[in-house]
Image (cartoon, rainbow, N blue to C red; front, side, top):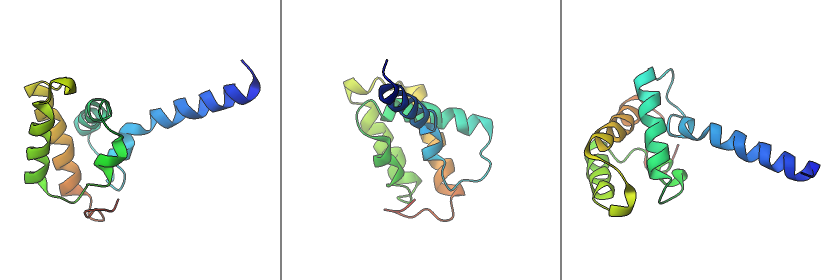
Length: 107
């Protein structure tokens, strides 16, 4: 592999490693169960759209998140089980309740 390609590959891998953290940006010291829930949310949500779409939607409130997670779960291509939907919602609800700087359209 050429040096420029190796550098690009390393940067891509490093960017993916921080993807679950993107959902938790602005949230100080999340507990391990929330980190795991947000890692699942990142994996499942990113199957259909960029995770940034979820990040910029923070601040919409837990009720709307619950509705959106259920809508996404019902899409056959999502691969989200009922149990996974509960876990994903756990992540999103924690972020909504913990991130004082988060508001719709912001981070």
